[in-house]
Amino acid sequence: MLIKDDKFRKAILTALADSEMLDIINHAMYAPRSFNDIIKETNIPNTTAFRKIKLMMDDGLLVTEKFEITKEGKKSSLFRSTLRSIVVRYENNLVLVEAEKNIDTVAKTTERFFSLDSK
Image (cartoon, rainbow, N blue to C red; front, side, top):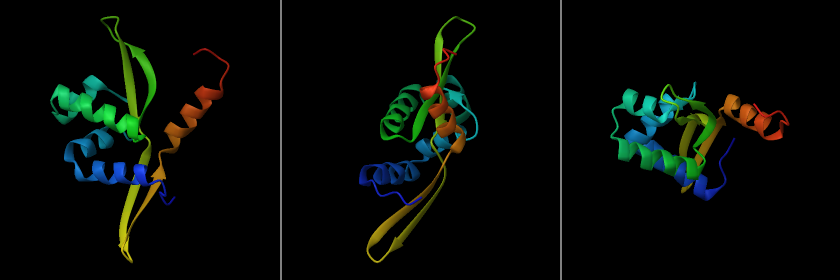
């Protein structure tokens, strides 16, 4: 799908240009990851990871797929990328961004939203 929303297109380009954001997206693409998993797997400092995850969630590049309770009894969010692949082209003085949605995330989020079950 061609990304027409200018804000979303800029968010995608910003994430592609930032190696830490790209690492976060890569680690949360195929399976949901907790904040702690992301910082362990990417070696990104806590404050940087927190700031970038929040920014990507605000921009729609990451979503909270579900919550889990840790062994310590704390609630933890599991994040997942909303996009599976991205293609960027420069053509006739325009930057064109095409992206493929991460269908698993979209389907699960939609299913939970419309579900009357309290799972």
